[in-house]
Length: 128
Image 1 (cartoon, one colour):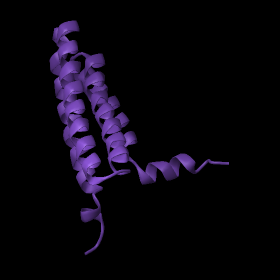
Image 2 (tube, rainbow, N blue to C red):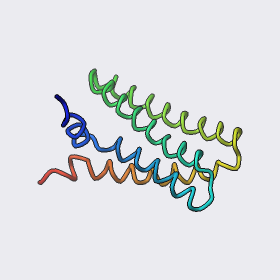
Image 3 (cartoon, one colour):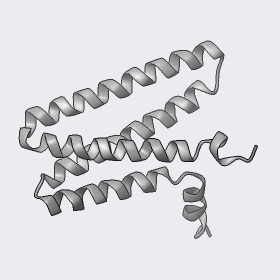
């Protein structure tokens, strides 16, 4: 039985749990300050979408030639940027009052996500 399967998976890749926890925290903070809770959670979950796309690009780009890796990296970067821009345009058009909450939650979550990725980088975690 795989009771430890989830625990082992979280040890290998704790970022999804961190991102989902930050989305919950964004909703709690938004409720505490009187901001739009749903849009704050959507903004924070947008970072989870970025993480999924980064993981897929890394897997796809790592399984081929160098030229393919560069192409996948550039296409993935453009796709992630396009998704973020389109998501915020849709949020602005659908619920203009929720846009500041979504932007604040996205910015805070993405900043923490970048620090977590840096902290988990092999150059930082392995001894020299």
